Image (cartoon, rainbow, N blue to C red; front, side):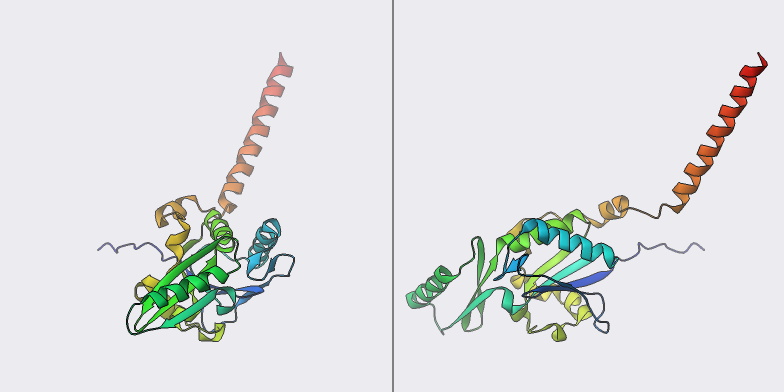
Length: 229
């Protein structure tokens, strides 16, 4: 009887993007791995130095051995602007109020979405520059981002509210809050990641070592044969 060999599931993780830090979680019961960002890197919800931002992320992940996985990114309320309009019916006044709010957001490259939620409309505005750079970095490192979710829309006010397994399980329910499509990133499928992710090179090093020894032996034999003649 042959046992079916199922593909191993990629690990799931959550990045919580806060005002001056990024927190990485793999399990709700474990403390996060934290990247602190100084004001010469990130200030007022936007990236001051893209080069320093990328270098800080790379050093943080490498030094903490954070491996590629499937990620949900949750954004702290302190990292975006939100405005709710309470109304039982659509009206021109509602539209004007939303437009006025959007006009006051100071982001250089804003991404906004109007979300109908029961009797209210919620306008949410993110900084394109921040998350475009973050997503590009993750994409190059073979992370696969499943969702980019403003915390207040999914009732996550702080990292203490994060429940990793529940969050991943309920992603379909959060579809209308997912801003990932606004950034048009093309994350690699699992088959491509599995094929191209660097593997353990221990066996390769052993084979190269043996090949080197064989080349040396062959060179010695040839040299001795030349001396005979």
